[in-house]
Length: 413
Image (cartoon, rainbow, N blue to C red; front, side, top):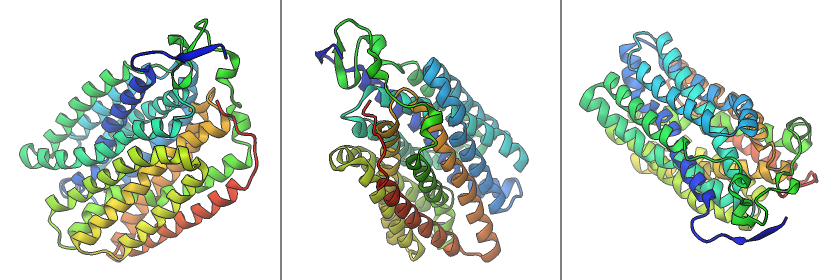
């Protein structure tokens, strides 16, 4: 490829990783504060738990589904401008959510603001990271999305403190301003093409400063989504997502229902953040060594096992153990998934391919938390929803195993 050894100094790919870390911290950290607001929204807006849960589900559906549009746009025009717009929308959505007087206004402000904002930024930023790495792709992806875990660790307790100190409306306003300021600053550091800096993935330097065609190898999105491997990945992701996002909405009210104080209950979300951060930091590099396809199967199995723990947990220690275990495997799943896509379908159209794959996560996010809320309204119990979620992830593991037996051409770049 006409490349020389890695240039001295900080490889700019790690700056892209740091920027994506910040974006995922801000975007998903803001989204996952929602559990801290459920009780006050339910009380002040006069809504049921199911209808309030649907606010988060609607936002999640949008931000994973919008990758279908933002991914190809980033492949063509770069990630920076999309992420700037996304972070402005996140801040605006949070600020307007604090002005909501009805549940419909909450859907419009939070759902559209967070949904469109994260949707504009998440897939483009992840796609940018994939282009900067090949051999260290799992590690880089893990570090980049560990911002989600750190955001889950920091933001819900911060939101709880702001609610108790300022009130929930003012808390949303503060969070919105901070999200827009920090998120836009991080977005400006993104660079989608290593070739523009005279580099190849993993830090090799181009002799003539121009990327060769091989450096941008990959199949088209249209060809990728027709393969049995992509279809298998899509089905597995959809099944898993049905259960994966239920704890982010319902773990706090579940704990409160079991006589745990709201202040202590919200710390369970932070425990998910601790586990998730560990999973992304530690397991991403492990996936590079063990094989990312096999690792993905293990994450589905781990998520299913952790949900089984939640189904029978009641006390604070058992719930904390669940939160840490679930966070670990959830973090590993999120870290390795973009890398697996790039491994099999190449880097050239990675944003578009990831965007279509994430529509499966969008559907699961729309179904899972909202249905769990309505099941609780009808039965006064979360057990059926948790059991269904665990079974769905076990089936996802089986689908992934079958998918791994399908031999397709693997694109290394």
